[in-house]
Image (tube, rainbow, N blue to C red; front, side, top):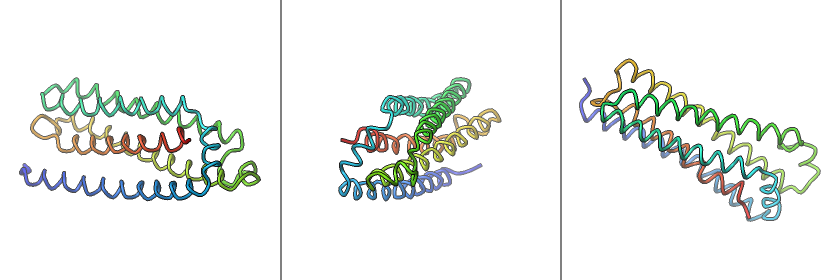
Length: 198
């Protein structure tokens, strides 16, 4: 059986990992800021071509899923295994809906020949090609993190079902929840940068 010091070490390790993820996306956001300063009009025009409704829906979906993940941790601490499993399953479903929305959004852009180095963007202002290049890199990387987060939540579901995560031992679920909150937090920055750019 692991001691409390072991669990403290696990939590510290997770926070260090999350910090490295913040540095990664922080660097991309700084890059965005540099190019936005150089091509403000092109970035605004590029933002107008994104679907704000889908972006807003995805924001709401992630906020709700972040709440249900937090609630699942509370439920397991209160020894309510069934509720915890239900909340986690709902969170995974939210992640899936987010990815489906993103798939259709990307598909629409590709259909209209709007993707990095497409004829439409190459023949247009250089700032728009950079805007959509950053859009695909950042939202694609975020989407990958959503998939990883969903996988971690599924692992948590399996561990709860096998009674390896319970009221007396929930550090794994807590860390998976922290990762999911990071995914949510990153999107809170992505949404205004690309969809609400003025």
